[in-house]
Image (cartoon, rainbow, N blue to C red; front, top):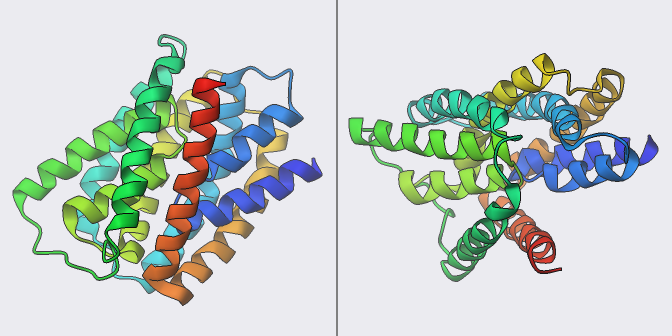
Length: 249
């Protein structure tokens, strides 16, 4: 339990900055609860994650100008498709996704590393109807992925908000948190109905996840987009290592 609580705190801190908290907490849950089925691990993780993510989202909303016109349509589409993704967990082999996700993560990390100005300055423009369509499309894709598989969803969101809407890392992280609340909520509804949440463990993890989220969001707001960019590259590298090991080991 001490291992899980520590992992929940660290996951909340990382998730509040750039996403990717599942990279920390999900392996810890598999180690600590070897008898639990994967759906129960994912459901318990979603319960803890939604509280930490919501805490970080509130913190950002009070301190940063959140791009709601991009975030809300993305969140709505993500909510719907995250539920569909969670329903598909038992129907599709996840192993087929690993090589594709690995390639995308490498591309995202290399692109961000080579473009030193990427996300350093807010270059957003007035929101148009075309941008709303992009928001819905991105929300649908990321929502399904987060409900079905999950690892790296927050990091992909962060990258896409910068790439397609011109936000800096800080505003993109704020928008990503709004969407993450929606995806976690939809998947949690499904896992709860299906009985795949260990409530006693999940409540304790949620408390520590919120604590980590408070620390993470404070660090991001204090040190700005440059700090978020460095953490983003660190998390992306860790995800690449994990997916590479899982794919080729």
